[in-house]
Amino acid sequence: MARNKVEICGVDTSKLPVLKNQEMRELFREYQAGDIDSREKLVSGNLRLVLSVIQRFHNRGECVDDLFQVGCIGLMKAIDNFDLGQNVKFSTYAVPMIIGEIRRYLRDNNPIRVSRSLRDIAYKALQMRDSLTNRHSREPTVNEISKALGVPKEDVVFALDAIQDPVSLFEPVFQDGGDPIYVMDQISDEKAKDIQWVEEIALKEALARLNDREKMILSMRFFEGKTQMEVADEIGISQAQVSRLEKAAIHQMHRYVT
Image (tube, rainbow, N blue to C red; front, side, top):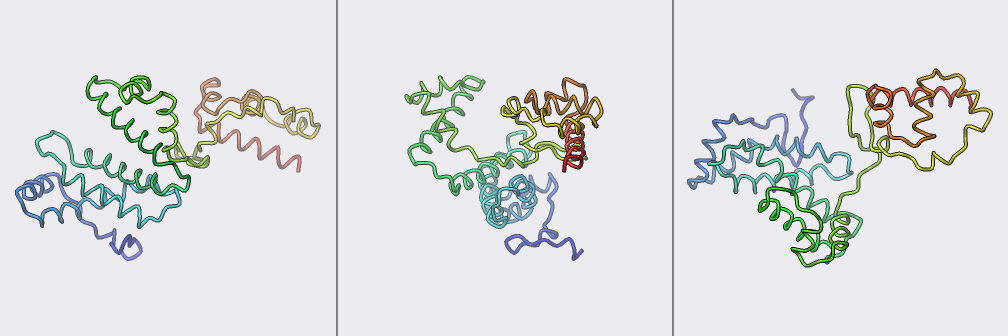
């Protein structure tokens, strides 16, 4: 329908084809036998996969068209390197490659500039990590990566931290159908342990109007500096419930003291 039409890079996403697994395998056989047209059909038939991946990056302020084009590069690399002999779905193989391509693009275009030498160490460390993981069938330690590269451990840690994408405090990490839980809700506030705002008469009176569970949640969150997850585990309710109760209690107190 017309109202569902969304264009990205001039592509009408409402009309994108969907390939069945058998159709996909047949196209791969034809492409790997030399039929270039089959590659175009594989790309077109998997653009929805790219769309689903770029949804994960929608809150980073990047142009959707740019992310889509970069994701398509990852898709084409996946098509060119996919092995039909492996017992794995194409989507399972392609998604990490698409994500990797987008993350490389975001790192290279990050306004927080990282020196070339740091990036080189970080990329070498990532490659060595993959190599050691394949060799030993386990995740290597930083010390093992450092020793294999001949680079000080501190430099490896610093380099890997430098290329990490910054995460917004308002990025949602969980939602159970109610209010979303954000990164900031997962962080304990050390300052809250030292602020003696309960000594203010107005706040004391506002606290007195809360029920026992609301008082307990606010006490654990703002006096003891616990995360919502820690509070939820201690009192036996879900983190989403803690979030809702906390917001309702603060709203009620705000109405009373203002």
